[in-house]
Length: 109
Image 1 (cartoon, rainbow, N blue to C red):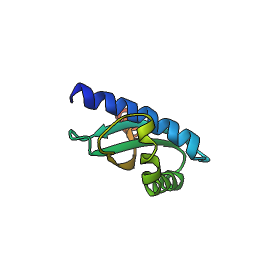
Image 2 (tube, helix red, strand yellow):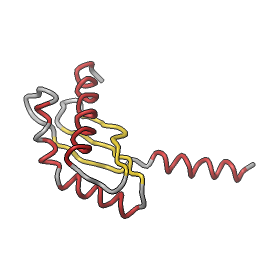
Image 3 (tube, rainbow, N blue to C red):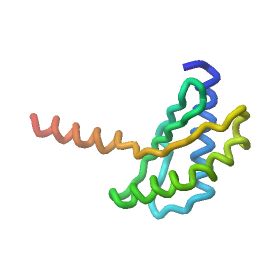
Image 4 (cartoon, one colour):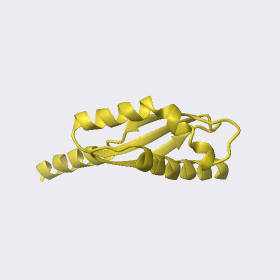
């Protein structure tokens, strides 16, 4: 990953976190856990951690993906790009997967 794309990634991660905090009022805790950006800076995958049940996770992702154009319109405030990337939101299940593996390891002992 180039230095430019890494800087853009970190800036967009911070921007998306702020936009979600200010523009969306969720009943559950929502945070941006990671952001992957393509080498041409044209596509962004945003991984969201949601503290809640599966239905609330699905609601958050559906709302964010439905409002992705509006969220993308805030990007010029944070970073200067020739072309704004397309964005997609995904649930980050890293914590849940780690807990499952820990339970499996605990059961082996």
